[in-house]
Amino acid sequence: MLKNSFLFVLCSIILFSCVSSKKFKASESKFEALNKEFARAQSDLKNCEDFTARQKANMQTELDALKRENSFIKENNTNVLGQLKDLSVLSATQAESVKKSLDNLGSKDAYIQDLQSAMSRKDSLNMSLVMNLKSALSDVNDKDVNIQVEKGVVFISISDKLLFESGSSQVNKGALTVLGKVAQVLNANPQLDILVEGHTDSVPIKSACVVDNWDLSAKRATSVTRILQNNYSIDPVRMTAGGKSQYTPLVSNDTPEGRAANRRTRIVILPQLDQFFKLLEKKG
Image (cartoon, rainbow, N blue to C red; front, side, top):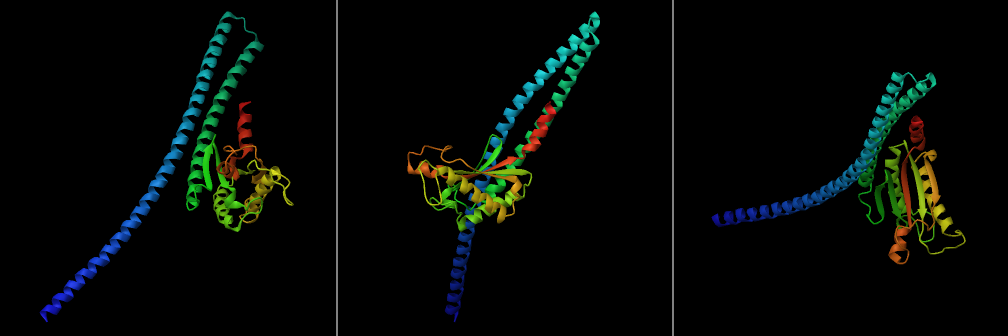
């Protein structure tokens, strides 16, 4: 009986060890996956922060130069005005002209401050957009969807194989999920305008439904725009659709890989132009 009890205890210990080992390995595997995802998120955030820092530095350099120029002109005009008054040779008209010049410089200072504030807000919005888009599309192959910022504008480039069959302008049903995720971010930022561009490679195309590459690129852009409006309720007033044909390639069309890269639909997220026109009007 003692022998049987010993065997029972031994078997229980071995069984418990096996179960604990499996749980440990499962937890270890889950931790490694989470750690990789965290590292990827950190890398994306650093890239966005680095780009924004470079942009701000360039803009700040230009603004500092303008401020120095304004200060110099203002000081010089003030000195000249004082000298002319002392010499009693300044007519009323001339004095008023100099005064207006100084007032204009004050307005220019205010304009620079407004511009600096607008740029800061735009940089923050662009970083938020990129992070939200990358988070929403994290399960999509990086080769099929590329998100980047160029000259203060956010671009989403989607490969044609993800959206369309060869030579067709009809969007695949499988692509609706990707467009839906993009639309979710766009709907969360109704103050931004959207430009949808269709791009092709340089191989000529002609069929019963398509006249040439111009026609195909325009129809593809229109198809994507129509889905964003009809399926995901994006205000059509915000959107513009256009075809670029083969004339804005990313790389050479000399290889199959290059042609595949050039066949794409690009969604460009733009600030509303009337806001910037109003800001520019203040300069005058």
